[in-house]
Image (cartoon, rainbow, N blue to C red; front, side):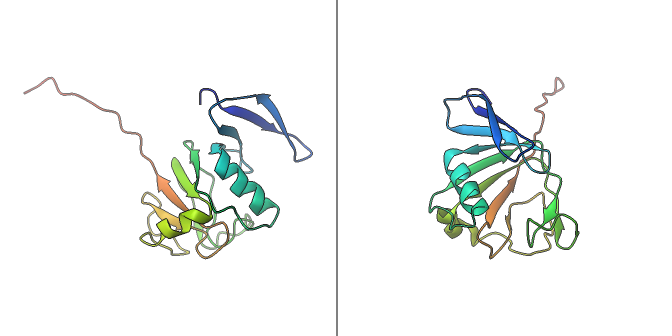
Length: 145
C-alpha cells in the first residue's frame, strides 16, 4: 500500500519501522506469517487487546488480501486445536467497540458455515469483529455479439 508505515517483527517481540508512511495505515507480518494492514483505530484496538484492556469505542479497518492461515473461532490463542476452526481467504475486517452495533445481522456461529460470506469472528468475545471476504474477479470482455 502506497504511503503506509511498514514494520517488521523483531525476535524480541517488538517491531522495527522500515518505512514511515503518511496515509494512516501500518502494514506488517502477523503472528501467523501473513501480511496485513491496519488503520490507526485498528492499531489502537489491537494494542488494547494485547494489553488486556477494553478496546476503544472506535471503528477500525484491517485488510488481509493474502488471506490467513486459520484459527479457532472460539479463542484466537488456540492455535494448536482445530475446534471451531475457520480459515478465510482474502478479506477485510471491521473492528472496535463502535462496530458491535453493525454485527447483529451477520452469522455468529462458532463453526462458520461459509467463510466466503461475511461473518462475526470471535462472537461474544472482547475482540469480536466482522470478517468480510473479498474475491478478486478478472473482468473479461467478449468480442462476439
